[in-house]
Length: 291
Image (tube, rainbow, N blue to C red; front, side):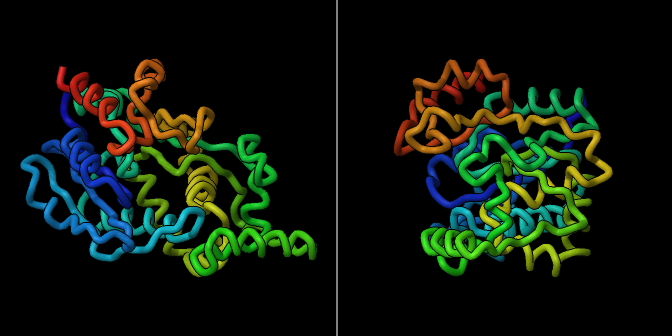
């Protein structure tokens, strides 16, 4: 079975040890890897570009300081996609974080994509999203201003409560129906191109609105994709095992105790991992991949 050309777009902000293992697990002759290094990091990732034999690694020169809930993470995704697009043509694109890890080997990933060619794998729900009950199904995320990158999360929350008290609301852009879901996805290169073109053509309006949306990374791209000509090809599955229920972190940092549940999920990737919390789980997955 011929290999498909794949691009991995990675957002990195911590745990260089885990990132090295992640790169080793996904690299290959038909794989290119693009990495955005959070501007707050003092870790120089440029050394990675010449460290691996198979596949190419591109460290983005333009970087952003990413804050949880802020718009900069969405801009980081768009930077990765546009950089990927300017460098080459691929069949599929994976958006993952530096705390992800594959559960199957490259050959199995390639086989899966071959069998599902033309399908897009994105988690989505038309708003209101029941899983987002803490933000009124997601409506609170965009009906009020959340200047997280300017003020921080705590002050933005106070500002949101003030807007609620004053009964001030914003309306979603009229040219899009709002959808939401996990920001991590596996999509065709053609859909990625569509997203880049759509954002570039509507940049002023989209940036003006979504820069003040809480967790815009979980709404903007889903809304573009589910309002696109590709919508009928989208499978409501992002192919990731993520535990949003167990805690104490949300999502949970996975440990050796989660090993059986991870593999029962039949997903391609899992997140999130932290070598400082539990490196045994990664060692066990690595052995499984090698076998």
